[in-house]
Amino acid sequence: MTADGSRLSLFARIPKGVQVESRGWTRTEVHGIPSWTSRVRIGEELPTLRLRTPEPTTPSPRIVLQGVDAYYALPWVWFLRDYVGLDAEVSTQHGRDSLSIVLTRDPPAEPPHGTLVVLEPQGDPAWHLLRPANAGRGIFPTGDAPIPYRGPLRLLDGGPLRPLLVETSGRPTGLIQDGAAGTIILGFDPLRALWHDAREDSSAEEAATNGNWIAAVMRLILWISPFIVWKGLWPDDAPPLLYSVDVEAGASYFDAKTGRCSWAATRPRARSPQDTKMENSLGTSMRRLEHHGLIGTFHIDLNAVVDDKDRAVIREAATKHDVAFHLPGIGGHAAWPALIADPLATRRALEEGMKTLSGWAGAPVIGNRYASWKRIPTTHDVVAAVGLGYDSSSLAHPPFHTVPYRMFVSATGDPLDLWEFPCVEVIGAVKAGPRPLRGARTRRRRTRGIAEFIAASARSSSMVVLCDHDMSLGADRGHVHGTWRLDPRGLSRVLRAAARRASSGGLRPMRGSDFHRWWTATRAVLFSFREGADGDGRYLELFLKWSTRSASSDLRSPKVTR
Image 1: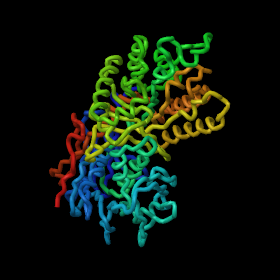
Image 2 (image 1 turned 45 degrees about the vertical axis):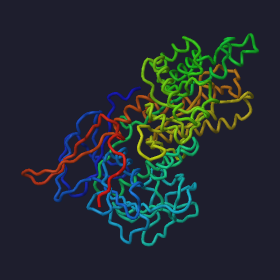
Image 3 (image 1 turned 180 degrees about the vertical axis):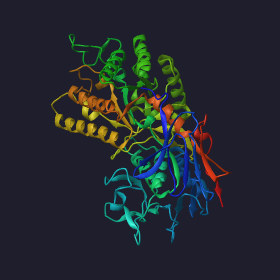
Image 4 (image 1 turned 30 degrees about the vertical axis):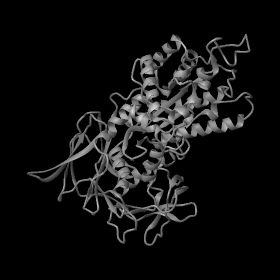
């Protein structure tokens, strides 16, 4: 399923007492907040929304710096552009803005009403588990489920404010003022921590630890803002389901000289002796996904391609499903760590590999996954420079409120035209190993965990990216290739769990490239406002600015007004 023609939802929270003149907008409620909503397709004009205001006012946000370098406003500026659709003014002075975010070293004595105060974190970065307190359970998308945070943090003295978030010790690190559009104080900066992680991109296990805070911060902003507009996240409000598959079996488990897989090499009468050859492993993977109504995004290892039949099945996969990048023709996974130590050599290898794979696929290649998940801080800079568009080499963390996040230049922190799509591996459910009975209970438990993850993501409107391999999805039953052996029951349960949520409309199976195309177009759109007057008095009218350029070409470092 493509995203062509899919609509983007737009929302507005209007202050009480403001007269609304609309055409194409309807009343709704979002996270318990009375709002207005409309939908547009990419490039369409915004339906009329005119507000009669007694005083000049707009929902434009302001980031106020108090003893904090403007450098640390950058992740907040880009968060507001990408997820809200508003350009923020960065200033050292408070204004009469609807949304104020104060970055400060010390808590203000009396923060203005309707303000998010983010205190400069103290101490060394560490891993924390933060749980919404009673006052936060109606605000955070996780309810009372804990949210992992990796970074520096300070504990707070509540005083007259109520605890919003508490650390495992029970002491608050977030405070809230009662009442609608009140004040929130955080003893940590989740967006700065995610920005740091996106620059360092240290490992698959750690890089996306702070990814859940995108949805959480969005809820906080909506709660404190009496007047705000914002963008939805998903095509037609249906979160995408990407079933991604690393296609690499032929590179390690197929001998082109003998024409047999490693399992059949010593078994003359083995069934399906070429199951790991790409024409078969990729073809089988497609058929198994299609049987359940799912769409594959196949990350191709060029070292696994041996002949024209392999190249033909890649063209078929690009037509019926999607083809993305995995590894250039450098000999195999073992050569990747040495290659990425040299960014220039990495770029040359990626550019040559992309050109080759695009020729086989008959279309430009979008999307990447690192070989064996390995990367160094500069690797994503190179992936962005060659135009792969998105990476999916970082693991999502519970409670799995997964949203794509922007990557930033490792050295400078500037924004990149590269997004991370955090994923969840299914290997623990579908890979049996040489002895199929060993670990069977563990696999069943992990299968249930994946099914619960898929169902919970559909309920919370979060994207799902599953990571599989053709050594399981594309392998013949009973074959053992190294440590790989397909667990047919585990695979069937995973595919059926995904298919159930897709058929119910809770998730939308998509090609990775189609979703990326829709995502980048809708993240670049910004709201604009025009004030005017007529015979009925003053008014404020909303518009959309669609960009034909990437958003990161428009802004690098935030300018500060004093």
